[in-house]
Amino acid sequence: MIMGMEMGVLLTYAGAIILILVLGKLLLWPLKMIFKLAVNSIAGGLVILAINFIGANFGVMIPLNIINALVVGVLGIPGAVLLLIFNL
Image 1 (cartoon, rainbow, N blue to C red):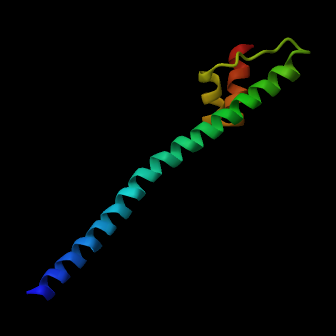
Image 2 (tube, helix red, strand yellow; image 1 turned 45 degrees about the vertical axis):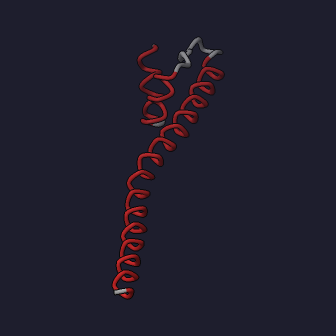
Image 3 (cartoon, one colour; image 1 turned 90 degrees about the vertical axis):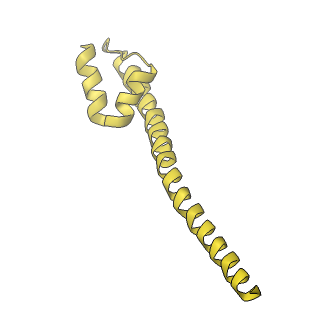
């Protein structure tokens, strides 16, 4: 009887560890995506600042706001070009 209880406890621990690993993987993926979007949005904001710094000599400005930073962050350089075209 004692051996059966030890095996049950062992299986319960193994199941709990597997469940924790699976849930950790499921919850970590969205966190990575959010972190990547945040980093890309910050990079997008820096690209917009660079465009505004260079474009100030030519009268070209892109407003720096969260929407424009997200567009440049998600789309990259084509997003910056898209915003430049919309602002001309």
